[in-house]
Image (cartoon, rainbow, N blue to C red; front, side):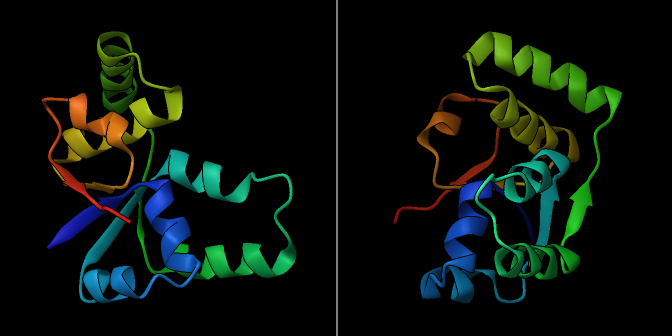
Length: 120
């Protein structure tokens, strides 16, 4: 099975959430390029945290930006009034037909999206 992880899932995982570690064991993990940007652009990110993020990302498939994803993100943002990063993450999930694993309830309104909701 493969999943596209939302940024919040990765942050919970890196913070040591044992339930996530168990759930993601053996899963083919994909992330959107925008998730990489979100993770690595926190202003207060220190070198240890950045290294930890990069080590995690090294084991993931990074889904690149494309015209198809960009066009879908525009449609999704307009239709559901999502933030731009969330629209790109949802579009990546839809275009690549990979379920999105997220703890963000904003994604639940997107009917085209295969969402796996993680409750903390």
